Image 1 (cartoon, rainbow, N blue to C red):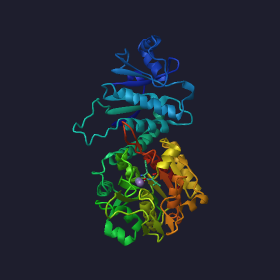
Image 2: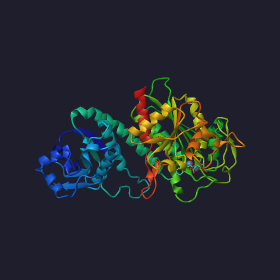
Image 3: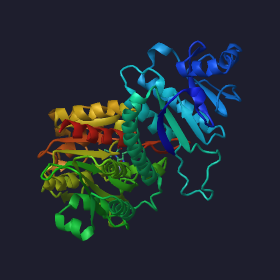
Image 4: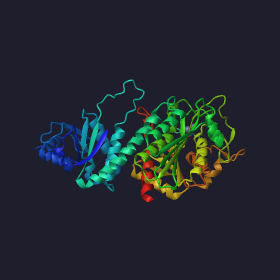
Length: 498
Ligand code: BES
Ligand code: MN
Ligand code: ZN
């Protein structure tokens, strides 16, 4: 979809569809009033018939409105004018995008960014509108024989600002929103691909393609012998049951000044998690193709950083493998020595994410990082704790946690912090090795993070558990692209802070 930012009067916009808001009860927003005035009170007359009173969720499509240059005028319910909050604005915008997609309009001009949203400026409203429009327009049809969807799709969206004064901030919102939207799409496409296509080799190939198409990106892919040489036997213990070769993917974006410490993004890249010998039940096992959403988000976030030419260094580290049962697979009770030297007793082969991440976290040390953030579909327990609305956040450094929480708040891609207290650590005690890979039923998300924390002692570190947010289940199942908006917002914020 193409986007542009403009200012001007609604009745003068030449478009297939003009989108204006109506608030409760049957009140016209300023842009709707302008259309009403130039159309000889056409809107007021229609509304008086009672087809719509302005509630959120309502919409009304009008054809042939006199006194305008638009083929259609789409009225969108905006609820009570005085107190539109962030969530309502996002719902209203999403409703508008779905309603306009249901028409034959190929382009649209929206005045919804005019709405007053408590505590938010034009930059926020425009960026959100852009991100929502491209999110709603997303379809994954790579494996459909008919590549075109049923409906005619919106090709061009113009977002309106009140005056020329807001145009520069609008352009900035558009640049940032576009980079984030492209990154979200990249992440969703990768994650939606089935595991027979999206293998560790495929992920590595994609990272290399990114490096070829963006200046400032460098990619290195380590294969099994190189991973062995590094002593990553915890990572390899997960890969050993699979026919697919594991890869350690390193994607570097260099945009900062010389000698600046990089931000490290470490993504869990389990391209299929069967559970291994501790095999999962059949129910919804197909969704374990999404167990590489952390890896996909890292690639997306780095692509966005390169797109935006952010003035900082970001390094992505992705351990990629399948987790499969088989004659050579790890057995419960097996003990391995991680790259850090710590020995791990694998009590449950389904707790594989931490086993691959711990070696990647040790590898991260060599970059002398300013901060390390890992992103992983790590625990079902996180879905129990937070549902599908918030990403779980655990960290060993309070300011880093704060920055990530703020980034999530500001990008409408929220995280919620859980404690990483020492009290939980002893759940990982093992009679045979330095540490066990599971800590029992209680506080599963926290003990998983406790495990990782043992390998992240040398730097500031945060862990994002995206088990509940990375994809949606059910009839419309699919990757969401989260937490790419949070991550890119964090990177943008870091540029301002430095
Ligand atoms: N990838 C899963 C976590 C997961 C499960 C994410 C369901 C989203 C939905 C992870 O590898 C896993 O299997 N974790 C186990 C850990 C347990 C064995 C300690 C889990 O959550 O059950
Ligand atoms: Mn698992
Ligand atoms: Zn997993």
